[in-house]
Length: 574
Image (cartoon, rainbow, N blue to C red; front, side, top):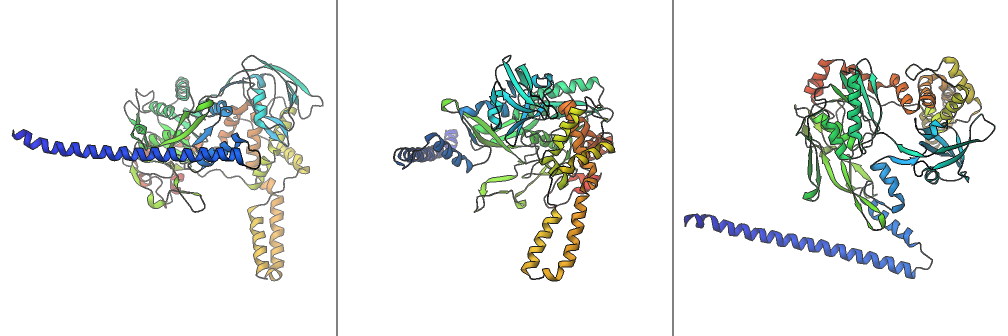
């Protein structure tokens, strides 16, 4: 009897509390349901009245799409509606890059369509269709004035179906006809792997779509046959993809049953921990991961978890800071909606989301997470890392910056067009790793530019313009005019010499473009190795076991990684 007296009264209270909690939850759910039903009814009524009564004829589909887009714009840029017409493009972007086509990217310039990159080993390249060729017709359809997406649709089709292309090639007087058959085009997730700097393996992973983890594993197996003793995993410019593929890739380097990432949503069913599920293929291989400000989402899961587990040295620039997880839901009429359902957290517990979409300024702008809200976390061995700002590298390398003249030569397609001219005049060049433009060849490029318009404003010129306006406001221009004119003259003289002053970087960009015409994207990457400071640093670090250990143990300045408001540039020189 004593037992019943001591246990049952608290049990009654517990049951009563549970009943109250369930009642409150049910009431809240009913209220949410009522609000949703009410708002949908209002929306449908507005749509109906506009459709019936508006003074002008309404495109109801366009109006509905505008309403959906406006509703989603209030959330984040990753939550989006996908109509049936865009589903195939969506699948290629976020799931798999397989499609039937000729294997080439295109670009539009002045209402004309040009080949920008033929893929090595696919129909366009095998038919000797080159970057810089103008596409004039596809199966008798003239392309002038057509948008890229329409031309892209014309190029695609079922495997083995014939396609007739008419092209104009710079330097050729006659239109060239190409009759080819479409093939199944598969763009690999791993665009390149090889051995760099002695026995250092290198893998360039461009995206985390289907089969990406298997591609990385296959590359590792092949690199091991070449007796590599360390690895660089390059995630620069990798915008992410499938979360599960990121977990599998971490599992290649981290043993079984280790937490990689936790997905946390508003609802309990959206909270999911992801752990490694099998023995690692390479649990001890010295590893460097390269990131930059275009490394996002799944890239940050891989880099962040390997950093938190003290398994890899991260080198480069701070990553993008996308800590949101999306899930796709089917809608009526074969359409889709991609919804942000959760945030993800690395093993230390940090969320690296950099922009706070739930709090906007009065103008509606999104701001970065405030420094005062950023929290410190600890890696497995006690290093300090921080949330709210992407993945901060262990070793920061300044991002490459190009002069205004180089940017102008690229944006006006003079680099691209000269590479086309060079390719059509030279049947072959040396291999990418050894190719280099001679001074005489660079002089030919400068001569090519002599009749080209590449006007641009330097930052100095912009500042001088501002100075002139302010001086005129203050009525000081007459007083300073001699000095101002002298300074302006010096700036103009300096600008005339930009082709000489910035010869090194211009030649680098031009070499990359020329090499791609012979050796495609793999060649572009290889010829860039000699200028790649991130990769050079990675090779240097991997050759120094003491340094790797010092970084991963958090010795000295490596104890704290990316604390807000502090300068860690000193780590770049170590």
